[in-house]
Length: 293
Image 1 (cartoon, one colour):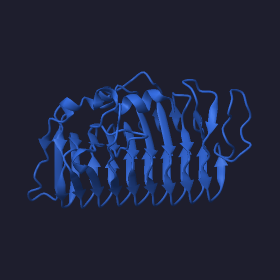
Image 2: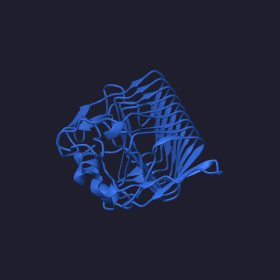
Image 3: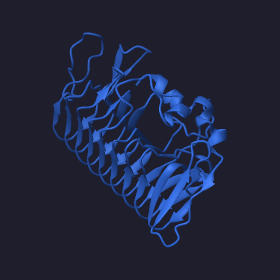
Image 4: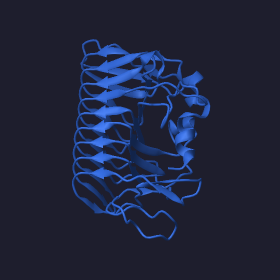
């Protein structure tokens, strides 16, 4: 992936931290089994402490004031945003049930100094980490973007449709604050079950340094950045299958150009099929392989 996305997505203006840290509290649960955390991108709600039952994100919400534990499901409702990528105050998120991202919504979860600095970290010398946990499945249907780092997902990942469209010239929603095109990625974490990603149309997509207990299947995803989809350095206990995607790579660019590329092959216990059989070309016009994807 070219540096424009990772470096600007969290480093520029530290996600407008001054605005984002002005927080509104989560609504009390009361008699309703669902707690609502609501706010705006300029004044988000804050999710903190142990919340019994389910949580719905309405508008914008941040996990930036310490540990947040949701015993049930967490749903990021249509067009809403959850950012759980703060490292101060030992902030992290644990969801006991499923994590659901609805149509047009965005979820940013987890951070580390190497691949995705925390929103509240020093972008020049990052040191903070937020490690998060989802016990159930992670499901995104028509989501604008999902950016997941340092997160252990006990169930499976299902991402279907959505994205910002086949372009890198648009930054809707929270991506405006990131000063970044829309993208989705799963990095530096684990999935107990399988990963199925299909029908996403966006700028960039990746999966890097993940440990997956089941199968991985990417199909019919259209990405405007020629450097996508990067599927690199993962350990997959099941099968890896890639079908009808705009492009797939198991290598990283060495410069600001697409080529030359350094191999970053995956470890796959099962069978590789489709576009993810042989290593991607190292030089422009070069042959795939000779090593496995």
